[in-house]
Image 1 (cartoon, rainbow, N blue to C red):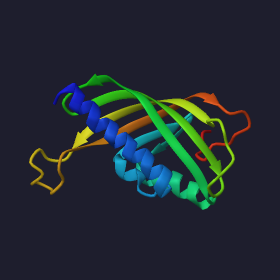
Image 2 (tube, rainbow, N blue to C red):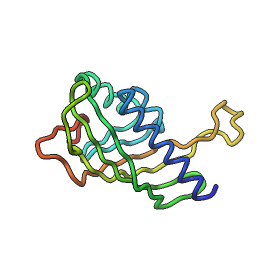
Image 3 (cartoon, rainbow, N blue to C red):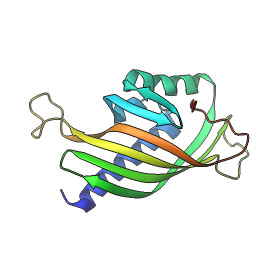
Length: 156
């Protein structure tokens, strides 16, 4: 696989995940992760898809929220045929409530470190699952936070 194709596939995966979180309240977000994945926000780590599902279930239980996760500067750090490490920049505009909500500045700017693994069978025949990339590890490191803002996910 060429680096350009790899970059495209992983960028599409990441934008699909952010879309799911922004437009589907993250209810299907765990499907983008391996069963034993780790998702870290600041100093809080969630392990496995059950805990990841719980993050978004808890967020949804708080009520309506408007969010837009804007991903850019995607860069592949290391790659092998079945494993990739990458970093991207995340700008988050978010606020509790129903749209439109009054906000003018991002609540968060972060670096997102992802480790992707390729899963499934090469021919898709053995278990019916075609080859695809999933997130095995995601670490979100805050670079800028709006003073006084409370993020929707637990960070401590």
